Amino acid sequence: MSLLVVETHPVQYHAPVYRALQNTHGIDVTVVYGSDFSVRGYRDKEFGSYFAWDSDLLEGYGTRFLSEVGKGGAPSFDAVDGKGLWRAISGVNPKALLLPGYSGALYRKAILLAPRLGCPLLFRAETTDHAAPRGAVKAWMRDRALDAFYSRCARLLYIGQRSRRHYERLGCPDDKLVFSPYCVDTGPFRCGEPERAEERAAGRAELNLAESQIAVLFSGKISH
Image 1: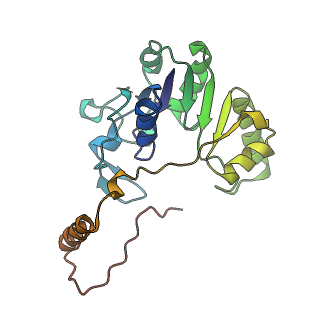
Image 2 (image 1 turned 120 degrees about the vertical axis):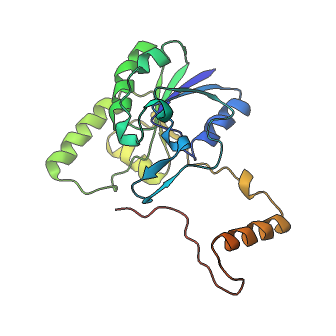
């Protein structure tokens, strides 16, 4: 069994899933990334800062890159254009193709090329009808476009109940819907109290926080 994934860039909560599919379930996973900017470091508009993930996002499964930042490749999500995609995927011979999105040049190109691979198309993304308000005309046009796309998918992997209701509203048959919630790699949290205390002390020292000071940590992204 082999799975091909096309994705714009390595994502910290997707990589552990691909690794588990390969190492735990014996599925040969190959991910074609549009760029390596998320592992090389980039400026995130919503975080408002420059950073790179400090966990290994590439180990344990097969990877191919359409562009690399160090060689003049796409430095951000918006810059990924999908050039060379067919050349990268044509030799994989997968049993299924998984896409985690439909917006952007890379995903549009992958959708157009999918029939040439001759394998089922799987779709798993943050689908919801609550993401943004839309006018009646725009909402109708979006629904028709999604109808056409979803009809081409062999399976629609929903991450939660709002995602499922989105598919049901558009008339997607129940036998196409598969529950596929977000996963968390718990490895970094598997440590004893001595290790936690050591990490805590190091973190407070890095932030120049005295032991008597109260610190409130927010981990995530607030955007609008």
